[in-house]
Length: 168
Image (cartoon, rainbow, N blue to C red; front, side, top):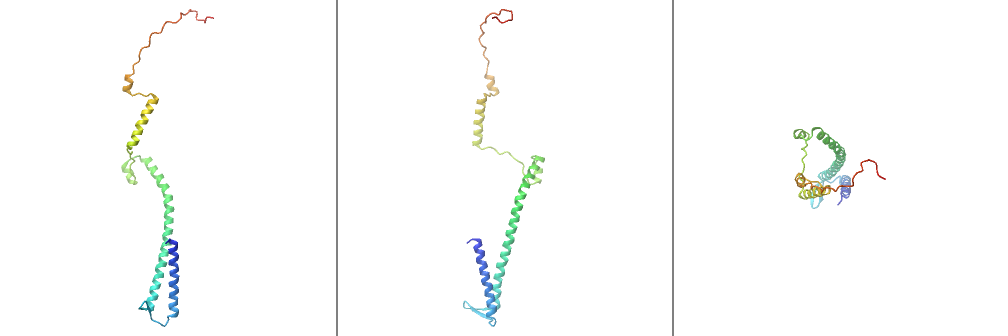
């Protein structure tokens, strides 16, 4: 049963109980006891029992309304305080860095770097190897293995004329 149906059901029961109380007071004025379900029940006790039900349901409805109002207020406060907390945390971390004692006074823990998973580490190794290959980057030991080989002597070219002017 949904909440609204339950509320309507209880409200209709309260209306019915209030009508019963009014009817008892109007029509059973001279009677002191009533025979209900094979039991004698005092009229005053019966009215008190019915009134207690009405009072209880009314009190619960009032508390539910207060609760709903308080929850709305809390939700509004939560939304506004979250942005302030985020900004304040950033400010404190920027001002004091990763000092554990000071951060603890603000209820914060120092930031720690999380160890990468095996999959992420393997991907990083592959990416580094591919980048080194593309850039032809060598480490210090790889560079030691690279030796320049002398190129063969170049054959002498045509003799210069010595005038410094181009020949036509």
